[in-house]
Image (tube, rainbow, N blue to C red; front, side, top):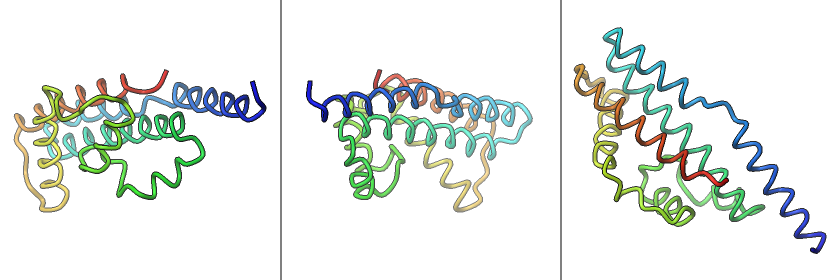
Length: 153
């Protein structure tokens, strides 16, 4: 084993350790989203559920990039517009890194509807009823579970 490969192995181990030791913010946010839903604060519930999705998406995407492209992670991230996995370019990168296809998951259409719902709330002041909030909670939970399961081990 060369000195360079030992450094890369050490870097990989550190990256995975950091991912595994990151607080599960998405779980906290999903719990808060459920509480907001239970209180009838449906718009805030939907927005908070999306925050959970974005947090877990960013954590897993960063870990995947660290593992697979190492020192080029920063340069690769500059090429993509965000960490938002519903963005076509980011989704393509994520799918390429994982070998998965997010859009083929049974919950994906519901996730796209959830993102549209969240954007309506945040950008246009849209109102959401209990059903919309409940749908968002379910799909956000499925999204977070699936994406977290694709994290490098």
